[in-house]
Length: 296
Ligand code: A3P
Image (cartoon, rainbow, N blue to C red):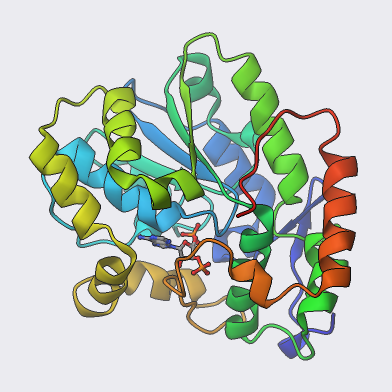
């Protein structure tokens, strides 16, 4: 796919990295900073493949940790490990820190993993992830010609995905969960959160060991509904962290983070032939995996 402005995804360790400024400058340095960062016992890391609902779960987690249904003034980019301009922001932050990242499991902070620090992993139907990512990249203005089929063939099902393929990312997490002797990884399915937000938020609260009333859970669920988060994003949130993230990344437009927020938008994008192609690749890639993806 031809890109505008001679932009290229940066290559590092077999991965294609999105054009976040710290990664453009020196990907190795940022990956090492993350891997070696000093962690605290009560740090929480939200780890998800891009477009799986990271912004949503980040807001829910922030409210649960605060014990209040109040929006954070900052956007989640404020604690987005691979994109923040300077890691000292994280070092100087009061506990508990709701960190978030899209980097593969093996690069997560070593200390956090070794100490059994809490990790919230979000998984979403890869067909909906593909559609969501397609729209984000389309809106970014990075590419000259860009139809959905080309995106699927050359990027999502090829090897040019941001960081790694969905399949590799999720299989790596599955392996980590099998070895998770601390019960440190809590996996949440986007679709379950959408269908049963009260139940899933209750489970999240339990995992985070916060005691919380049913009223507060209901209030958090309401405040974190798609429409309310979309509205708050444009009326209340301090956008400076997103602005600094895209500044210097070579002419990328500001992304729309709250697009549709639905299950099954893939049906509006996949032809029958594309769907069959996807299913075949999924079957092959996931043949040794027991991950249950909710396609509907
Ligand atoms: P769509 O593009 O399908 O709308 P991430 O935060 O990881 O980048 O994921 C973004 C996706 O999560 C977008 O999907 C966005 O609309 C969706 N999303 C954000 N908040 C949501 C909410 N409260 N409920 C449902 N989906 C939400």
